[in-house]
Length: 525
Image (cartoon, rainbow, N blue to C red; front, top):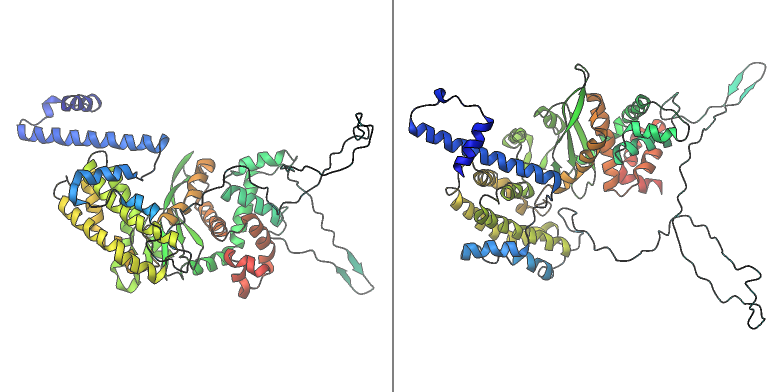
């Protein structure tokens, strides 16, 4: 196998025999290094292929967990059965009074079969009757009498309409004066787009991921020609109109006790070079359960200055991955931020090393499965707050203690530069932040809810490919903030944009907060 690896390396990397060292020890070390690099490359290739075409689930079945426990014997008691007990012993802990904490990944079982059509939809009754001839029975020579009816429902799609609204302002005059009626203010002055059309363009692009050139193609079916640049300009001007409200949304999110954050890259068109893009960054910031909203920020780079500027006034818990840019936030006491790490991110490292060290990495994953089993039962029972903290102290803390001891034990058994070694080092280095969620029931075991908020960006960039400039990135961040906040508040983003864009120009600054998505529905009643 080693010979095949060496031949493969030599075939792709030209080697001059005269430049090789003569010392056998050095040559042996070079061979070891090259083989390790080849193994790493092959694993990376396998991960990329799996990410592209295969499943990305990191969950292990109960049978796999049981197998890992059997390999270790007494080292990991009950690790394999914990996942099974989770689904059976939901009443082990007393139910709480709240709605639960943690991520919203609990999905209710959907009923099978055809469901009733939504009652809120407008209905039109169409009666189908027999002809007069059919209402007469040829057998008994009598007329049939009505005895009932059978009904069924079906969806009918009515294509959208594009109307032209003509505003006519009448003028009156007398001997000394002339008066002209005024029309209602429009979101964008002297624009042909009403609030409803602006809302449609924004929601189609930001929520439904339809690029503006496809929207232009759809509008052509109505016989209307609107340039892509025009629609981009509408979105930019709408974001500028919502800028004060965006600042209020940011203030609301940063008043949370816990804020979750992450980042994802996006291609940005570089107009200084022909047909070239560079990388920008979107950063979501999600509030806690008492501040259900999301605000996005855009930065041209991934430098620390971006989150540092955004979080300048924040004091509280910050849950994120172990990106080095955040380190200075937690080491400086004046910043008033406390780090909470993400177990899902940590688990991912061990799962990636599972193929190369199944026994030890499987044992760690079994421990982590026990931690998640506690969280799952808590969510099902509605345990939160102080009750959740006590539950974690009772059920999770002993598992964490065993896991920490096991990581210390295997640290010297794995190669430091191997995937297993790096996974163990990552967990031990961030151990204080990883266990902090047990200190407060308002903290979550992972940052999955924030990672899910990036799905809209990830799906969108596969369609619109890139943003046109840094200003375009800023526009997308503002509009995406309101779309994501509407989704968290169960508000229709189209209805929200249509209403807010039509009113915000004449709205009092003191009453801006009532336009925020989480307050909008109540303010309209």
